[in-house]
Every structure is written in structure tokens, then in C-alpha cells.
Amino acid sequence: MKKIGSVIALTLILNAAFTFFLFEQFKASQAKQSIIPQQPSQLVNYKPNFTNTKPYTFTAPNDFVEVSARVTPAVVNITSRSRNGGYAVSGGSGVIVSSDGFIITNNHVIDGGGELEVTLNDNRQFEAKILGVDPTTDLALIKIRARDLPTIDYGDSDIVQTGEWVLAVGNPFNLASTVTAGIVSAKGRSIDILSGSYSIESFIQTDAVVNPGNSGGALVNTNGELVGINTAIISESGGYEGYSFAIPSNLVKKVVRDLREFGKVQRAILGVNIRTVNASLAENLSLPNVAGIHIDRVHTGSSAELAGLKARDVIVGINGVETNSVPQLQEQVARYSPGESISLDIFRNGRKIRKYDVKLKALDTASTFR
Image 1 (cartoon, rainbow, N blue to C red):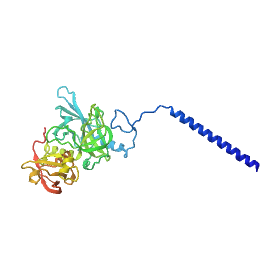
Image 2: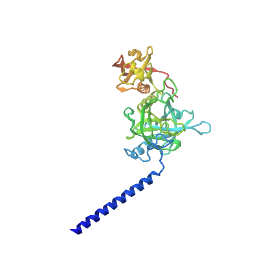
Image 3: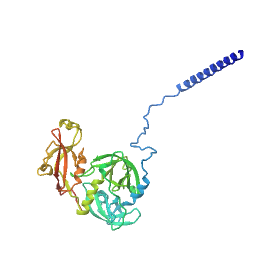
Image 4: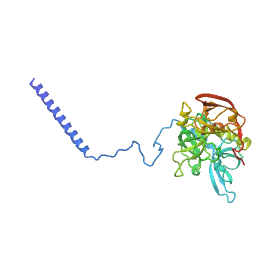
């Protein structure tokens, strides 16, 4: 019994000694930390002088290898050479849209007035002929004499969603067959780069890397379908800064069809002066949302007048497609030809109504051709 009591006493003494040791270590640690100078506060993941910085590593939701291999052969390099001397005056990219040599590109890529040289992905070179241009959309159609060429199928740009993965394919700085990945940042963007009263800017905005030379190249979805033609960047440095813009493929398809058949675009218009609805207008007109296009004026004899549209009407949809801004309305109307009919969803006096069979009239001066 005496032996057991001695063991218990010894155990208690050891526990007390160990506890005292830990307490002294803790006090020393606290004292040491108290003399470390305080660091200034900093935002999490803050990187000065960088905007729209992508993570160092990321896992894409799709394997882009197969898609890249499939679409790059259908993207070409275009060089405009002077007629005297043959030196390059401009350049960019183009997308083969039919196996017999029709290629879509930007108007500003081929607008140098020189001879066009097209280099395919397999390094074959061809002279190209300009079939038609449309400055109002900054698109042009050219043709080379070749057969059995690879093509890219059109996708539906209406169903492209913000946040969706896309690939930009082109020839930046003459680096052939360059593929970059990003997401759709926004739709229906207007950045005021096209001149003219009837220019159409309803761009798909992406953060896929696009630089000079990418103009006229392909923007494709993860199925390898063409959803846009890369056209512009916003940049203070002249290089990529995270803002790239592409013409939606549904508009491209219509322009290509017209240029092939007529050599110029058959543009239709409503015949109205319009502006995008703001908060003040929405309140004054008792609109449910701050969205839509306000009609300021209806022109005499126009499609809009014949359809019974009035000033202060607000257009919110065309053929069931929401039109929340002027660029979106312009894009939708531009997809139709003179003589075709559309339906309009409008708000009038606080009530939503639908106008059926609004027959569109032509704008004869909307495009030029060569």
C-alpha cells in the first residue's frame, strides 16, 4: 500500500513539472512573437499592376486537344501585299466556310487595296479574290481556287452563355495556328469602333488571348463550332489586356450568305430612332425591368410605322429573343432580309403586347462591294 502511494505521488509531481514546462514554453513563445514587427494589411491574391490575371494553374472542364486539332486546319493566314514591290501592308486571319475555297475574314484585314495571299495550315499558298465586303459589320468574303478544304461548322451564337469556355484560333504576330482558351465574359457589347450610322456592334466579349493578327480568326466553342469571328481588342498597350471581341456567328452566317449570292449585304431596317432603356425611363414608363429599347421616333413610311409602332413604345423581344439593348436589337434585325417578317414584343402604356408580321424594308446603302 505504501509503495502504491509513492507511485501516485511521483506521478503527480511529474505531471506538475511537465505542465509548468509547457506554460514556460508558451510564455517564451508569446514574448518572442510580441517583438515581431506588424506587417501591413494586404488584399488576398492582390497583384499590383495586373488586371484580369488568370490563375497560374487551372483545370479546364474539357480536353481542348481534339478540338484544337480539328479546327486549326480551317483557319488561314491572310497577307495583303502592295501591288508595287509586293511587300506586306496588312495581315490577319480567316476562316474557311466551304470546302471549295470561300473564306470569311474582317473587312479591315483586306482593306489595304493590295493583292491577297492566303497561307493554309499546311503551308500551301494561294492568291485570293475579294467577293464582297460589309463595313457595317467589318466582315469580308474572299475566295481561293482550291478543293476539299477543311471547314468549321457554324454554331448557334444565341445559345452561347456568359462563363462558357471558348477557343480563339488565329495567327497573332504572324505566329501561325495559335490557339488560346478563355471564357465568354459578356454578350451584346458595343465598343464604338465601326463608323457609320448603320454599323452593327453586338460583340461576344471573351478573355481568350487575342492580339494583332487574330483579326478574322475563329472563336469556337468546346464542340469545335464557330460561334464568332474575332475582330477587336481593347488595349492601352497595343497588346492583349483581357478584353477581346468577336462578331456572333449567326450574324456572320447571314452576311456570308448575302455576299455569296449578291456581292453585298441585303440589309433590312425598322425605321426608328432608338435608345437603350435606363432606370429613369423604366420608372416613367412603368416597366417591370430596366431593359429594352425605347422608340424615340418612328419614320414616315417605315416598317415600324406600317406595323403600328409608336414613339414611347419599348421593344423587349424579336421573334421571342430578348433584346435588352440597342446592339442586341440591331444584331437581331440585321439577320433578316428586306421583305421578311418578324414579330416584336413591346411594352406600351404599362402593358406587354406582341406585334406579328412586321415586314422589314431595305436599306440600300448599308454595304459596299467590289
